[in-house]
Length: 447
Ligand SMILES: Nc1nc2c(c(=O)[nH]1)N[C@H]1C(S)=C(S)[C@@H](COP(=O)(O)O)O[C@H]1N2
Ligand SMILES: [Mo]
Image (cartoon, rainbow, N blue to C red):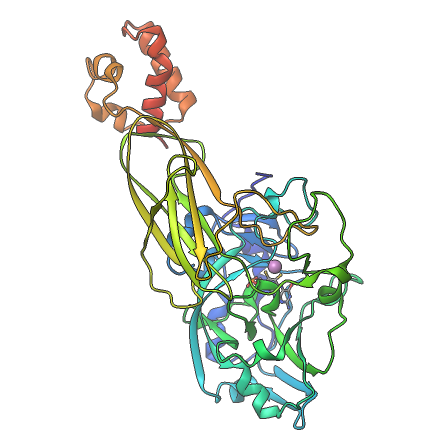
């Protein structure tokens, strides 16, 4: 994996001034938004614009806390004045209108749990490398969104029969002469009762980094369709020609020879995400003691619902059904786990998800020019070492209580130094068992 740059705890203090909402008297509901901060566990890809990735631990949680939810912004975060904010609905409608947030909230309220995944999630794994943010696993999150149906807003404007696509406009502070971030979705998806304009996330007013005061929620479709800082909805009777539809966010629909270029006109806009599972625990390259072990993570799908999740501990030769441990509904991700009795040896642990149509995650990459929709089955290598290592018993426990080891949480290098010191001080560790003793100590008593 490329440079993993973690957030320093203080890093957001410096940025907080630009996160403040302007205006003297904002409604009280807006004030919580100001107290916005991200967890120090997040992986920083860029501070300006803000691009933060969730750490693997996040896949153990049925709902992603806001402070761990990934951020992907093409431009700088705008300053939004809630007092003067209006949403404009125009184009192929017979009753165009502008509406304040307060009036928008008078429409029927809807709520759902939905996973949002960046189309570029997993881009870092493509070989050869693809330009763009080098996301690992964590440009995805699962939140409870609340707002109003986009269909209700469109109904209010009375969209015409000629309507084909809905273009969303955000208030981004555009960088230089870059194109505005504008995406469109087809009318059919826009009218789906689950497609919404959200003003709440996990029961709080939508945070600024996530699009306050209003964003689009397009369940099952990749994050690029989920426009943040929404200020305009334009109904059009043709295909939208903006850069991020015509050139960006297009996929050949199948794998192409790695490293090749494809004419955007021959590709299609990215819409649904693909079925995928991520292993949060154990971690890749772990050395761990034998015994009961929990293999766990999260899995999700897009337009086609999630079917099942299976786990293999033998590199994909045999598979066992994992247990789904959350009930996040049709559009959310599901946490899963699998109990495994690990015996000493080397293992390749895998998790694979299958959607309700029977499509299973691939074992090999299907390369595409922008590195979208990575969903290759993940492999985690684990080294399981004996719990009652004979040399641990005779060499360490011969003189010390286990408390002494338990009290020291050391790295492998540090344990190696300790073992060498003990050997100098008379411990009879057979030379050929030194390495496995160090493995054992560093697996059981790690930082
Ligand atoms: N206005 C606006 N909306 C946007 C973006 C943006 O840059 N500007 N980024 C999109 C992309 S590519 C993704 S993956 C999601 C990320 O949403 P998040 O930052 O809330 O995680 O927002 C989408 N909506
Ligand atoms: Mo994205």
